[in-house]
Length: 187
Image (cartoon, rainbow, N blue to C red):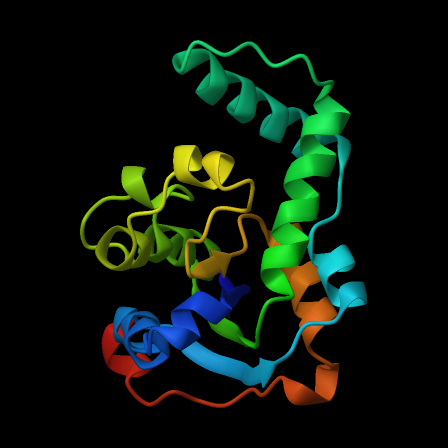
């Protein structure tokens, strides 16, 4: 039941001095920091972070086509072409500045992390979530500017994704296990 999740405060979150507030929300929810560091991502890290799996390509293309259709636009690109375009923009965004990579640990850490972060498109994120409170970004704006959506934070969505991402950003010896004293009261 206790699991680890990977959270990344992206460079726009750092530039806006939101790192402390973001970390505070995870800790207040009952998750503990197992690892944390500031990193300037490399091209290799960005390539590993944004892997084009068949499932990711299909899901991304469906979302992109749906958003375009709502604007009266029919995309002529293949699923792969859409994914390659978005991946290029997302990698460029990741490489713009330093990020804070964090491993949080706790009961249902992945699910809780996703709920705290909110919807990928900040415009759709609920007030009270990190994206809902701190950014107004939209797919429409990102498409207009031909860039990735700037949403200040990333959270792993599955156990497999969390494990992969943790291994990209941390060595095993950089992840710590310790007892958080308030867990005995919380759980």
